[in-house]
Structure formats: structure tokens, C-alpha cells
Length: 388
Image (cartoon, rainbow, N blue to C red):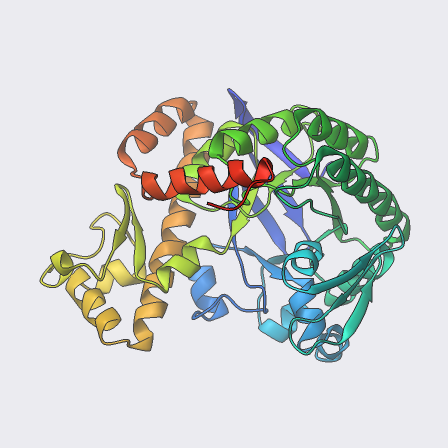
């Protein structure tokens, strides 16, 4: 029996139910990121009241601090962080390659120096699975090797094929009822993405993630790679696009058949005073909000908008009050949960295309000049040129 029950699919967009040991998750779903076993600034009850029953935590961070065995001794990750919903843990592969001082990657695994104290650690595919089994997450990830954005095709293929070998070893060593997802790699090559998705699909994992995207590449490249991989993945298994979490990208990803997404973006920008609205992101620190008696968004039902004015939020940020970070985070997380619910409803009613067009015509993405600069840097890196 599949762990995903599709309710309706229309023009590629899907709505369904994902079954886990800690409850049923309605998809498409956005998952907030709590790498250190916490959603920054909020209690678990507040996260739940924002509309979430699944969140993401990170094995790399928890392995280094406070230690997986310590969490086990304290009753497992759910009990440790007092979260009653589902948890997805990343294997930590991306963090090993992006945060740690990397020593050596072989077919056996990866050795690295901790970014906290410099101590050397070794993670193999088998150990990555074992650590996540000890943590007790509902959904766990196979160890993968992401490719740098400027890696030549030969290096991308090498990392992809190693990811496939590691995926088989993860599958062979996995013994619990936790759902183990494989991670599709292949860089920015359609051919490699297609090969990776096809190879991993043949191994019959409970679910599939798309890794190595949203790294600064142009959006059109990210969507091409996403569509290419999705076309090769089973229809009855969940599809998870890793590290994507802006509102406009959430809508676009659903159109391509993605069921699950995660990103620290909504909570990170909230702590910097950037709040989501139906018209786009606003900077609550701007002078225009100093005297605004209305909430940040009148149609929002979050605790922040039901109780406080935009002027009050403006004041909190300028006064550097800690409450500012809590109220802003609540608002952005609730915005993403409401957006997911609206998308699911539109799919069920057969009106997703209209919803998509209406949302994207109104929602203003972040500064196009910034995006252009990012595109120039990406192209320069891909061509092996000096960063602009």
C-alpha cells in the first residue's frame, strides 16, 4: 500500500493524504524548518496553531549538538522537543558539504570537520540511516552527495552515481517503519536528472526528494530540472522539493506536481522584518507603517494580525524587542499554511489554474534587480569565471 493517497490531480497539480506514524498530512504541504529541534522564536503549540502537523529537523546539527544518543536517552526527538506531529529529518548531507570543513569523500562515506569545534567525524550511508532511526523521525532521508553549482558535468555524474550507490545501501540497512526517501541529484543537466530519477524510482523507495536545487540558479533552470525529474517519478509516491519556500515558488512547484516543500525562508525573513502579504513581501520597518492602525494584512487570521497593528509591529522592530521576532514568525508561518490550504482547496474544486494565475498576477516577488544579479553570478560560476 502506498503511503500517499491521491485525492485529485488536475493539470499536474495534486492533492492527497500522506500517512505517517504521527498523523495524516494533507498535501501539498509546506514544512517549516527547525534544524536544531526548534522553530526559532516559537513554541511547538504556536507552530501547531499556525496550521502545521509536520516540520523538518536536521540530523547533522542534532548529531553535533546535543548528540543523537542524548536525544535517545531523553525519549527521542518528538519527546525531546515536545512536538506531537510528524517530523522529517534531513540526513545532513547538504550541511556536511556546505557547513563543515570537508576532508574526504569516498564511496564508503564522507569524513568532515565539525563547524562547531573542528573535530573529525565520519558519516556513511548506514550511519546516516542509523542516526535518523535513533532520532525517531517519521520520514528520513538517504545520504546523498550534492554537486557544487559550478561543478563540471563529469563531477556531477560522479556525485550522482555515488548518491545512487549510497541510496541502495541506505535501503539495505533500513529496518524500521520510518519512511525512507531517496534524493534525486544530477545538477543542472536534464539528462542526468532524468537518469537519477529513473534509477532511484526503480529501487521503490516510499518517497522521493529533489536535491541540489534552489542554490542560486535562475528560476527557469530550477523549474526545468524539477519538471524533468518529476516526469520520471512514480505517481503514487510523494515528491519533495527541498529548500524551496517563497510563496510564489510554492505555487509554481505545485503546478509541476510537487507534494512537499521546506525552507527556512519564511521564518528567517520574518526575523528581519519582512512579512508576507497577498501583494508580496513588505518591510515592516519602512516609515509608511509607523502610523498604520490596521494589521499587516486585514484578511489574515493569524494571532499577530488579529491582535496587533502594523504600527505596533513597526515599533517592536525599531525598538529591537524580542516580541517582534515571535509575532513576525507567527504571521509568515500562518501565511504559508493558509496558502497551502487555499491551493489544496483550489485543486479539489478544479480551479487551481485560475488560483495560480490570480495569485501570481497579484503577488510581487522580491526585487528583480537582486534576482538579475544572482543570475549573473550563477552564469559566471557555471562558466568558471570570476564571481561578479
